[in-house]
Length: 351
Ligand code: RAM
Image 1: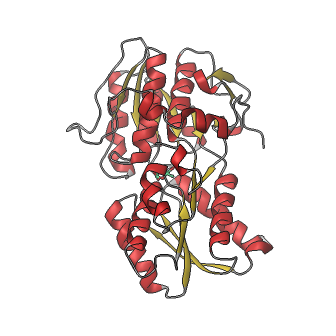
Image 2: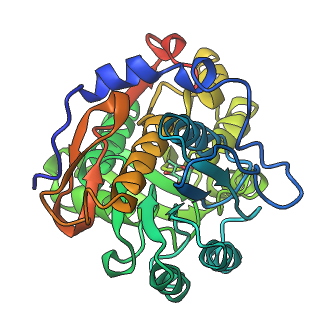
């Protein structure tokens, strides 16, 4: 399936922008999760007004995607704000979507906490002429104008299986520590991993014995890691396809008898995982650049608002320093491929 064309390679873009969240976006932290109204306040002054609504605030991954979006908004002279709930539940996102509609914003960029539950609110916002771009976690395609996908489900699933298989020598029990049970992104990746485990002879000796949910809450993810290890004494490895989950699991393992015995991989940010790679708890993990994802989503929203694209397959638009992107099937724009971080390269990244 062909989703897009882009000029720089995924690695080139990653290296190009590895530090931009810190060097290129100034010191204004739009995603610290600390503001009393659940948002970071507005900025910018053009006709284009954009609200970014992550799954929840206080997650380093979304802090970085928001910085990328802010950078793009600055380039586009757009008014920009981030708002969001403390916990990653769909109900908590609805009121923010309603507010965007009432305020008559030009665009909403959202990582959705549920594929269906937000669609009524999003429909109302779209009726009020708000362009809706999902990024990171999609809704049903009918519900939004575009989805900015970080990498294909196949690419993300395959990468994590390759990493865990390598760590555990190709055989043994593994478990998954995910985000919330209704997260579209994690569920798609898990479904693809399950299919691959069942059909790929390379994984014939690997058994997925449990999937648990930490709800992208640090403490719950930490507790779920402990429970997994107690419930499965023969566990050889854990895949955590969430930056919150993998960091909490790494913290648990690093200080336990399981360090170096139970492997951990998944999707993490280099800054959160660095100490655990350096102390040997984690060999490698994967991700894309969340800053690029937010940056691309903002350019896509701007292109929808100014009418240069409608979200149809084949539409193309310029996304600043990331180059040109094309809309693929189901109104999806693809950022690139997941990238693997390990002890050899983690020092090159700062996000
Ligand atoms: C967490 C969130 C996000 C996911 C990353 C990998 O930060 O669940 O949606 O894409 O992990």
